[in-house]
Length: 69
Image 1 (cartoon, rainbow, N blue to C red):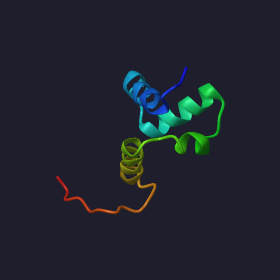
Image 2: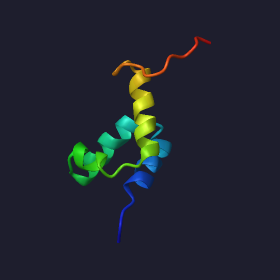
Image 3: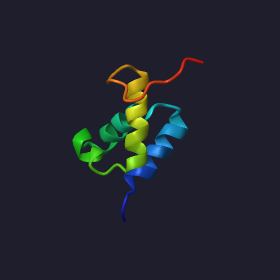
């Protein structure tokens, strides 16, 4: 039986209404593994969502500028 990490992360985000960053931390605690190990298994879509969250939280430099609404 193979566990799709990406699908599991998406489910955690939807069910618990938390960010992708929080979902990955939650997942790694449940399966008792390192974040780095899970990061290697994530698809480009989830990585992009994490990057956008980090930019919004000012955790990294913004690559693109947004017009204020």
